[in-house]
Length: 274
Image (cartoon, one colour):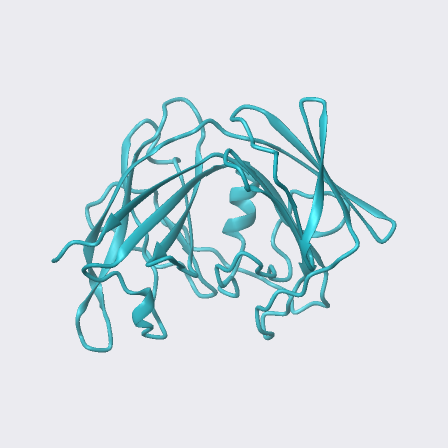
């Protein structure tokens, strides 16, 4: 499991079957703001969304600076879906619901420039269950052991799979970015810990008895995985979050960002007592 931060990735092997951690050297540029396009199509209603914004230097705050005036479409199976603005820099289509195995073509026209991308939605890998364990290496400011969510799923055989997990505590989205791939877990039952560092000792981020824990699992393609892997800790986890300066994009035309067609499953539990 990869938890993305600005510093090195934390390497933890505590007996649970998981992908091998990889440490990456992020050479991010403090460059001038650039256009960022982040588009998604999911297998659920409301999952067809494109955000267009300006990037931030990683010395800036991570607020979303949306760009209006774009023409956004997605073509699938011969049908063109128009995306309407719903907020500054946010464009959505209410009827497009993605289908695993189908390919989606994004076109964004903005300021006399055209940007395109293509993503094929992977097959669904279901999230079987979620549970919590004690984090043996971390405590909160009260010296109480923190608890960590664990996701369990069956990785399919003979297919390269890439995953993103999004964690919610009492409806609040965890800002850390969790991604995984099956280089060492192909066709195995996987138990992956969603490790993160609560460096600001925010009690709202802690998994405590009685809280509601929900985890969403996205099956993403290789290009999107590569993009997310290259992100830094400037990512806050907010839906309208500007990307850092220079991660790898799967969108042509000279912009940052990504376009991802993915199926999603989720599980919810009430956190039990220790």
